[in-house]
Length: 268
Length: 264
View 1 (cartoon, rainbow over the protein chains, first blue to last red):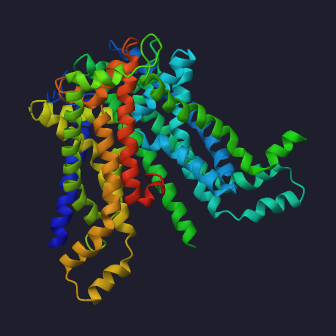
View 2 (view 1 turned 180 degrees about the horizontal axis):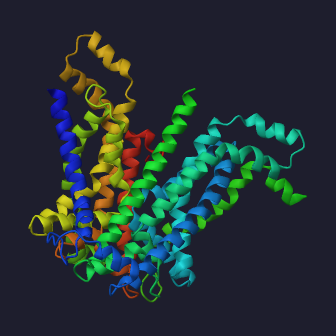
View 3 (view 1 turned 90 degrees about the vertical axis):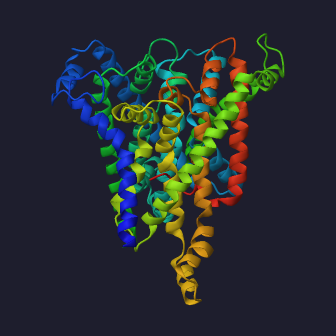
């Protein structure tokens, strides 16, 4: 009895939690201006989103492309920066220095987006750099890299430190030892870090808004914000929202599977 | 030769990231402080803070935001704690996928989730406003409360519970004397993850109340984007930062494991 009540509570919460998303997805499959007005099943909205038939479609597809390019570049660069940094942090002997770096690494994760966004906005203003692609990517690297560091660190903790030394003793250059010994060990962490960074970047709204400048650069989030602010949502955006929900969902399931796989591996 | 020595020492590999952190994390935060005390002609001033204390709009919004954030946080604890407890209790739930379903929405853009809330209210023909705002905020931040509490309860050493049982505690006593006190660090991290972002929210309140109710984040955004009120915006951000720092310091005493790992 207790179990039934407990589960009923959980499922009720889940229904409430997912109802709004479900409504958007459902009403992306009907050609109506407003949500709640079901006009029969149709893929018209998807078609007009993809073919550019809609009035705003070209703006939407540009925003989509920007979002993906920014996420790919930012995630790649933060994976490199974060992985190298993790190896460095791992080898710092001085406890205080190590803690100080780890503390600073945590700042972007604790700060609300708006503070990260505003602080970077002020940085670019005072350096006289006008906002655009480069500033957005730098900002995204700034809040993504901490997560990469955190995904790579556990792999290093688990690694046998003697293997690297052994490679050096056997005549490998540090670069070779890094490529042949360390990279294979931390690779799963790097991949998880990359996916995490990619997801965070796609998902970001506040930081992008403050660093994108006024030259008309829009990502999906900022475009949707501008659109929603004008009142009402362009119907095609329902499709886009559905696609994004699905993408994020798949990426997260992948990350989750990966981390669970790693867990089971270590128990052996 | 010198360069290769620099590279061979692996602790030096952290240097590029340290430089990056200084330039893109530490320096920007310091700049908030610098701009906050700057007048429009470039001199030092406290005028921005005087303006905050005397101008009713910002101050009222600030107090209103704290009120809304408190309500949201309390509701999240009331709704989230039982959920986290059930999820972490092996007798009641063994399903790991269920846990993931609760955590997933954390990773969907806040803006998207707010628009989804608007869609839900439209669909049910409910009016947008304060009610929608609180519903939307609880909806947005509930996973951030459930996750840390779930994590903490899960880590409680089962032998404590067995020991309590052996010593004759009943189920209620086990909960009030063992599980509840040990889950407090989780609640503290949950509060940190709900309360602070709620105050600084900007887009959510605009969308959910049709721009009628504004939270502190909106005021910051309005001012910082205008060149003539940028310093005032920075002062408001600094006030926000101080609250964050205070909350983190207080909660860090309670919660040592906040830095323990990522969110997944």
